[in-house]
Image 1 (cartoon, one colour):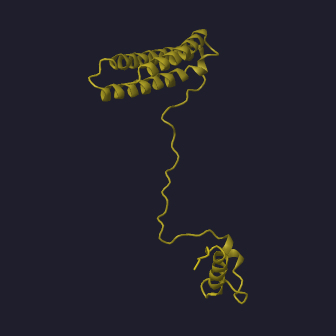
Image 2 (cartoon, helix red, strand yellow; image 1 turned 135 degrees about the horizontal axis):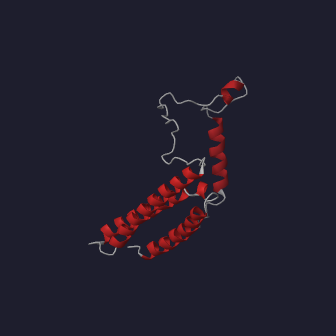
Length: 163
């Protein structure tokens, strides 16, 4: 006796299962069911077991934006303040960058490398405080341009020092 492949039976079985599933009394709607309320379709679903979301109110950023200086004296004092802060940030960065090579192991070197990246970013943020002063002072514009190049070259140096 030769067995034939069951291929002709597959469509017949699929049709039988489909008819049996549709004929059942499960949750299929029928023509005698009442129409659903239109407002129920537009109301969003609210899970009674869900916790309410806690949303924090917006806060002011930690970095205060400097306003335009009112006078030349204020611009000069702000430039001196920003220049000193930028120098301190670069010194802190240079100290950490130089300590990467003397790290006792690879984990410490990685931590120092990430700290150097962070300190260079902080120096870049201090540099951004020069933007309102660049139109008022040639020294501020020159320092901003030089610091822009310095940050870019230091990023390349840090990339080479990646542990």
